[in-house]
Length: 89
Image (cartoon, rainbow, N blue to C red; front, side, top):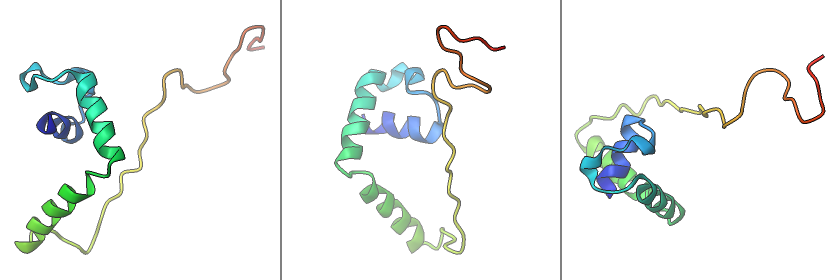
């Protein structure tokens, strides 16, 4: 389960494309990910990995990158949104 979730996070693949080799359904992996996120699980392994790399001077602490990108939601688009009874004129 943990490996499947980490695979989706690292690879960037959509969870619905989770390879069958993980032997966990995408919906189960997602619900477990959401539960673990709600319970605050992720900071502990993240700090452990950073600490391990830091112990071997493998982390350059002088800079950082923040990824603030957000995917478009379903139905999002450019231009005016038309509703029933409206026209684009």
